[in-house]
View 1 (tube, helix red, strand yellow):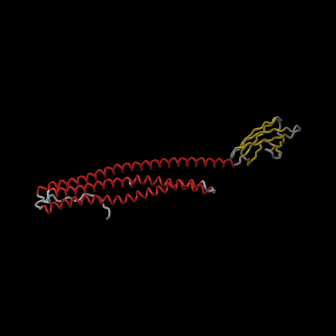
View 2 (cartoon, rainbow, N blue to C red; view 1 turned 180 degrees about the vertical axis):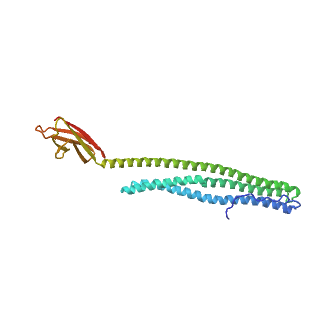
View 3 (cartoon, rainbow, N blue to C red; view 1 turned 90 degrees about the vertical axis):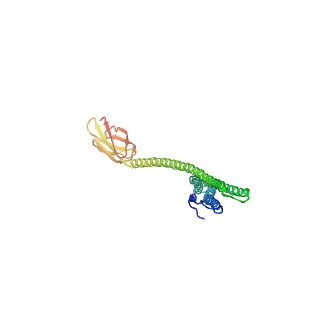
Amino acid sequence: MGKTNIASAALLSWDAYCDKPLEQSLPSIYQHVETASRKACNWYWISIRTKRRASIGARTATFLLLIAGTLLPILAGMVDAQIDRLHYTQFGVAALAFGGLLQVADRVFGWSSGWLRYVVTVTAMENLTRNFELEWARYVLDKGGKLGEADVKPLFDLAKQLEDNIAKLQSDETDKWVADFNSNMAVLGDQVKAQRESSDKAMEVARVALSNQQSALKASAAAEQSGALEVSFVFKAATMALTLAIDSETGQAFFGTVWSRLNMSPGQHVLRIKTADVSGEVIEKVVQIVAGQVSKLEVHLPL
């Protein structure tokens, strides 16, 4: 039997019992309320099967994922290869994450809660229907099986009470479904908000890491660039010949007032200046070479 939307059975026309004998009116009243009751119960039983399968499947899968998530990290400690340990641990974390998502899905879609709610409702409906049948039979037996026109109204009230009680059960169950639905949507909203905040934080961390990486790359690229040195000599008297050397290089002869060197590595260097006079005085200057820039130095020679 396929599941359709639950609805109240169509009421009989207002004159359905006018000028009808007991042999027709009472069976039609009984049949009408019995049909309405069975239709409502069948709808819930069909719904119960669907929710029961979904609930059992979700809980079984969650339990298996919990076992996997617990055992895989333990197995990771028993393997020697580092990459295998990493894979075991990652699979264990993924299993626990999927198990948690299944629990959230069960709550959001109301599989387990709906299953229990439907069972309680349909059980109450069937108990009411059974009591109605027994009360109807008891009334007929009390009358010795001889019913008159005066008995139609009490039996109609009995049938009406059953249909009213079933409608109230449906209404109560619907109210619980609405409350459960609103609660589930709130849970889903909280999960989405938490996930969005987590994603925003992850994006911010990634953005900062990328910015730091780019800064490091720029600094590294700048550090790899060479610099230059320009030295201006100020002589006290006439210009004279000099011997210039950078760090441990061999000295080179120079005559003039401005000396330069290109393609120097960034950092500190020692410039050695030796005069060509008889004294052969040596002057050392520490210069800081900046990548991509020309460092300038002015040297006053007391000659």
